[in-house]
Length: 293
Image (cartoon, rainbow, N blue to C red; front, top):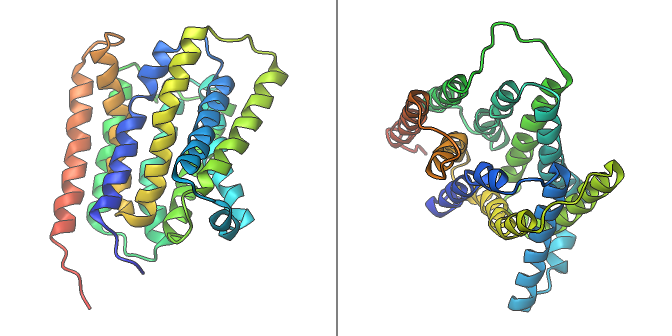
């Protein structure tokens, strides 16, 4: 098995930092139907890959033919289904409850990538995951989350599918490190077409031009984030990237505060502390393990 590099782990961190901007972008891009948002975003992602191939004078077909058809299907599940079920979850269950379930995916990434790569699940990975999930729970509790009287709704099921689809895709991607990330261009195109068709069939109203511009520009960064994540899963420390992923909703809340869209709260600072403690546990626990053999 190839050696996992710090550069690959950095790629995973870059994707986490970019995804933390998702909530601020959606807050600014008012009036955009979620399916249109995904269709436009993934369409821009596909176009970015095509432009990159043209600028580099690359022919991606030889590398794309090597990718098995089932892996394209898995990519569509991991990206397209993940985004669609996210929308379905928050529309058919209380927002905070759905969000908490969805953000179990970093913990699942830690566990599933360990299984996929046939590695040992270390104690510090589990401790880091527990602290990270606790941090997200505290953050959402500060916004009003209560779990005393949860009534199961269809959205809770969609949230589970959302979390599983992304974490399973990530784990399999980590295992098949020899496959080129160029397949994402095809996956983006398929996801864009499917979500665009759903938007048309639902007859949702068009969005304001200003909002569409924001989504279009931001989508370039989001396309980069998926490529960076795929690179990180294949060439970085996948478990550590999973731990770092708990930063996503916390940094997103920080961005909303900076933009004046939210108020700083004690729960936000506690959540940040818990997540950072988890990251520190994973980092120093890992440093204390000496490779054998």
